[in-house]
Length: 473
Image (cartoon, rainbow, N blue to C red; front, side):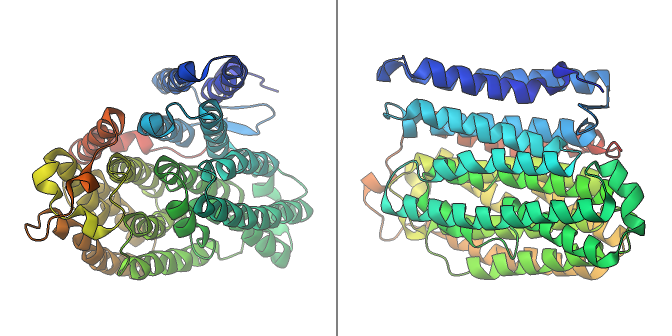
């Protein structure tokens, strides 16, 4: 039994900072609560440093009776999650500064971030469910942080759907245990091929229900637009980015390790879910006028493209590296767009962005990069990510799915252009106060995220090899 606590340093850094922050925040005066934000940022940086050391030493291992794996997928997922969490923290500074519950905000972010990291490395179905709870429950509270009517409604919908699908996930865990007499992935991989087909199929679908909820994929997507619209913008940025990373990497590990040799045709199921998710997300975004709801449906469509990598998890050697690279590019690009929305708190609709290029050229440039990046325009990271995912789908025998994804990509240009066009409008300018900015931190986050999105596109050839490798058994 390998009880190597240092292997879990990124997760422990977030949880330790959450505990220390909660205790320290109880004694700090309100004007000093920002110390906890520094603590949260320090925890993320510590986790990034620890992950870099792990990757440099190439020490892959499983710890605590093989329930948690540290491998290529875990390391890459940690880098993406911790980097994204750091961007969310900087994006949130002006939004929560001086708030009477500022400490609680940072603590909840740290706890849900730790849950997301645990999802990424979970190598056991019980560990997977525990990580689901840790990632979900603090996020419910964050979505209602503003304590207003839209936020309360959003949190209620988020919680009810999370509780329902979490219960289904727990039932699926029990069914897979009944079928395979184990919870560890490597043991399930040995026993499930001989298990009754019906039990395996029902258990898999139930477990996937929870992971699809975390990712915001069809049919577990209904919470995404309401939570994105009702929650504070930095929280909306969080829930449309980090849970997807945890849910998709966890799903990839489960399928590739525990169910690779079963007779259940889960690749076709994932391919159909990918097709429906990308298409529904794009169609629903076409005529949105709220920028936050447009981004919400955009994130649903992006999950459809990402699910393509899960559909060919055991059919293509390109699947893992394409998934990890796409997730990194998506995180930077999506957070950049939300950082601009955070920086312009009075611009709620597409038409509120009319003439922004004249007043805020820097933010306009970021928005152009991020919105065209979400389409998949070169030289942004998502362009290369889509190219890799589409190649993996073709390599895995799903050419029809790749063709549908290309068609959806072309179609998505319509609603992104509906946002881009008003930026350069010279007629009927909106009042100057509509383009009033929030502060320096959100703007700095926007510029940093856009730079990362471009860097990943330009340096993709150097980054992609880091995603190669198979999950540990």
